[in-house]
Length: 302
Image 1 (cartoon, rainbow, N blue to C red):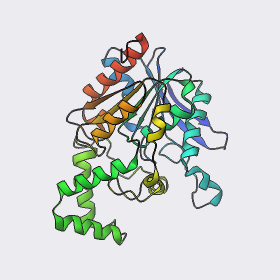
Image 2: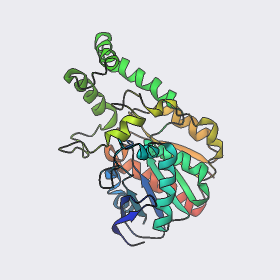
Image 3: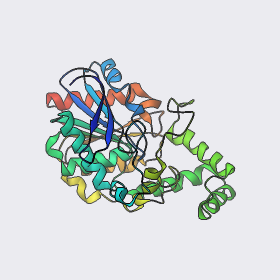
Image 4: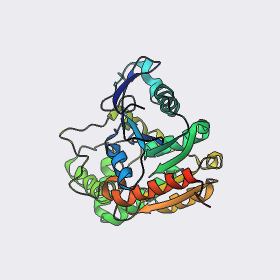
C-alpha cells in the first residue's frame, strides 16, 4: 500500500482522513480512542515497530467526526444514526474495504479496543490478529475501578465535592477540573508534559459526551450499558490484551479477558498510564512486536 495521507469517501458521502506509514507485507490498522479522539498516539507506531526489528505497514485514521475527518452536524436528526456502536463498527470494515486490507492486524486503544472486540466477532474473517489496548469487556469493571481510584486519590470531603458537582452538572467548575487534571496526570498521561497536548481541545464533544460523558472518570453516556463478556468466546483470532500498569482500566479485568478469549495473552506496561504507548513506548512496542512476530511464525501461545 502506498504510504502517506489519503482521503477516502464513505458510502454516506462523508470523508475520512487516513495515513499509512512503514513498509512490508504485514498490515496493522490502528483505531483511536475517545470516542471522538484522534489518531495521534499511533503516528510513530511503524517507527517503533521498526526499532523492534519488525517491518509493519501501519494505517491510522480519524473516525467520522474526529480531528482531520469530516464532522457531521449532530444537531441534524438525520445524523443521529452515526452516534451508535453499529455505525462505527461498520465504518471500520468500510475503511478496510476501501483501503484494500485483508488478513491484517487490528489494534484499538480504549474506545478503539471496544471496537476491536466487536469487529473480531462480526468481521473476524478478515483478521490475522487482534490487539485490545486498554479496554475492558464490561463497563461495570471500569466504573468500579474508577471509584476505587477516586477514593484513593481524594479525601472524603473532596470526593463529596466532586460528586456534588457531578450531580449539579457543574463540570466546568475550576476546582473540579483541577481534580480531573490530577487524575489525568496520574492515570491517563503519566509522561509529562504530555505529547498529546494541544492549544485547543481536539475532542469531538458531541461524540464523546454521547458515549462517555464529561471526562474519563465519570460515565454518563451510552457506554454505561456496554457489556461484552459473553461474546469473548467468539473471538477466534490470536489476541493480545495490553494494559498500562497504572491506568484507568483495571488490570484484573484484562487478565480475565485473556483467559476467556480462546487464544489470547495478557501483558502490561510498567510505569505507564492509559496511553502506555506514549508513556513507555519501548516496552509497549516490544510486546506488540513480539505478538505479531509469534503470530506470523505460528508460535503464539504455543
